Length: 62
Image: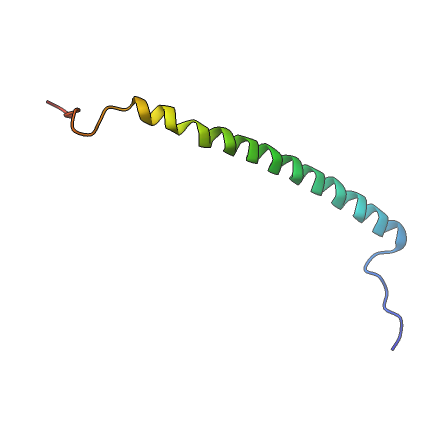
């Protein structure tokens, strides 16, 4: 079997790896932000639900 060529020349390969590392870093930051936001949102509903009136006490339109 003959040698297979890499998909990119060596300098292009380095650029590809750098570009991919930047993309991955951005995705990690977004994932970190979304996880933080999710934790906050999971904590919020409990106090909000406690303030709602009980189901039998509110009569709409009467």
